[in-house]
Structures are given as C-alpha cells and as structure tokens.
Image (cartoon, rainbow, N blue to C red; front, side):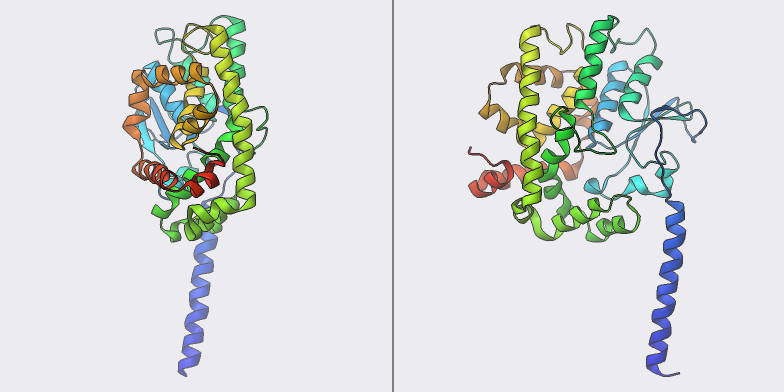
Length: 343
C-alpha cells in the first residue's frame, strides 16, 4: 500500500467515524416543544421536593429564582450554561431529558417538571401555600392588571423579537446584543461551533461566531445589528415611560398597588437587564424616569434580590459588563455605535 493510498484510507475512516458519531449524537439530542405548566407524565431523578434548572444570566431564570426566594421555598439550584456563559448545555443530552425543548428554566416538583417561566411563577405561588407571601393579588381587577404586566414583560421562546411595539420583553434580546458580543471572547470558538451541529436555531451560532471573530466595534457597525438594537431601544423608551407613568399615577411602592407581586418580579428582571447593558443609564439621562428609578432601588433592596441575583452573578457576565462599560466609556465613537446617542 502506497503512502497516498494509506492517507486516503485514513481520511475515509476519519470521515466515517465522524459521521457515525454525529448520527449518534444527533439522535441523543432530539428536541421538541413542551407545553407550559406541570407535566405529570414525566418523572425526573431528584433529591429534594423542589429543584430548579436555571442560568444566572437568563432573563426567565432570574424571574423564577426571585419568585422562589420571595415565597421562601427551599430548593436545589442546578446551574445550566448557555453559550454566553460557557457552552450549549441546554442542548446536551442530559438537559434535554429534563426539558426536551432545551429551554430555561425548568422547575422540578416532586420529580415532575414544570415548564415555561410564567407558568412556573404561577405554579410556585400556588404550591407555596397560604402560609407563604402572597405574590398573586386576591382582588380580580388587580390580578388582571398583574397578568397584563407579566405579558408585557414576557419573551416568546418562538419569536423573541416579536411584538416589540407592545411588549417590553421583546426588546430585551436586541438591547442585550452589545453585552452578548462583549461576553463571547471568553468562550472558546470550538464550543460555539458545536451549535452549527446541534442547535436548532443556526442563527445563534452564526451570530456568536461572527462576534467572536470580529468584536464589538465591527459587529455594532453592521446595519442589520444596528437596526435590531435601535428598534428595540426606541420601543423600550415608550415602555419605560408607561411603567414610570403608572408608578406616578398609582403613588404606591409597587406596580399594581401596595403589595409586591409577580409583576414586580418580572419588571425587576427587565430593569436589571437594562442596567447591566448600560441602557438604563442611557434612558435615565435622556428622559425623566424618576419614579421608575426609585422603584428599581426598592426592588434591589429586597432580600430576595441578594439571594437570587447578586449571590449568583456569573463571572463571565460580570467581566463582560465591566468591559462594555470601559470600552464605551473610553471611545465616543464606540458609545455612539452601541447606543446611537451622545453622553
């Protein structure tokens, strides 16, 4: 056998091994949509009555953690990585056995999963019992208003950027874009590329690969990225004004009255994302949002905030926040690229 024919056989064998591995891995990573709420048909190995699979940077995970802390529910926290915090753990075979949709968070109660964050909030509030703090108003009118704010802050798993004109939550992915780009240099390229093989949404690995290769300035110079970010910004301004106006009209500490509820939890996570990306500072400078700013301070002063948010801060995201603030603070041109405004 010649050297060339040996090399050819090695190549053929390598391709065959890779193809076999890919087929096996693909079969282990099959995903499908799930219905929100409790799934009693599925049983997951568990140690405690309540266990939560979540990510400390995930908007929906944060809502769930705050709710469990407010309710005083004891639970085991299982950190699950997203690519921006390390790797695509949500599409790993192990996590897909817990949540076949590959979405976060998942609450497990007595071994049965509860899916979709807003369904988890309502389920946890009911499961905590009457002795726990009541995060759902008893008054029907207030309860309907709470549900309005929950929907207002929600992010659709099917179309995250949909309905930006009517939902503040739909503006969050676009406004997080600069922080995503700043965080991705800490993630090895090989881990990002895995998404092309197994992630159902190929736009995500494509975006993160481009961010890894080109960096913040070049990414934010791209017209499609700018269009997404600035459309999100312009809609979010109006949404924040609506929250601020409601707080001024109500003249109460919380969004639907005198009692802290699930709506306050959802809005707090929205404001947190704006704060860590630099957008909250930008909006405060451009608009009178005093009532909203005072409200945010009240939200952060609650013990649940320390337990659910500050104690679980992710080192990659914390460094990315500092880097984004430093980069935009040192360059007026980059600041305008990211926020399209003056200081």
